[in-house]
Picture 1 (cartoon, rainbow, N blue to C red):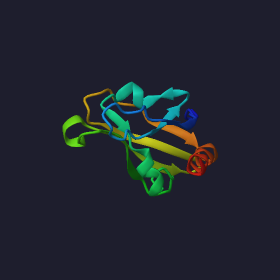
Picture 2: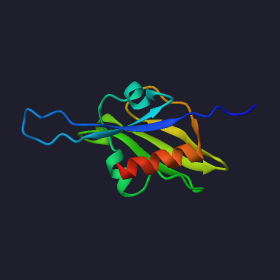
Picture 3: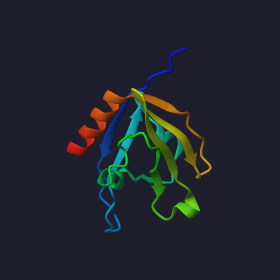
Picture 4: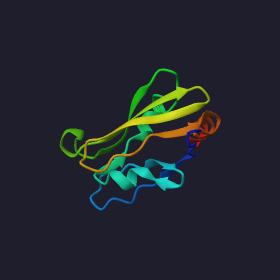
Length: 127
């Protein structure tokens, strides 16, 4: 049986103007098969993908790496976080071993065609 291939798109959310004078960060959110999966499992804070772009953490290589996708504005030790392991396996990129320490539901593993995934990560870096 051939594994199901998902699609991924990243979209940017501009911050609302803060009432208290503090800067509210924008967010980069992953849409998997058109679903904002972080919205489904984590409502304690914001995505941390801006930081991932600087270190190229979203790039998929043969060596698996854990990426912090979302965390609270306070501390991950009190309100939890969402992490995923990203790796390349043959012609595919896998997002596996989700960790949601915020008491929210977990997510299943996802498999993306490497060409589509790499193109989307490159588009995000350009934008």
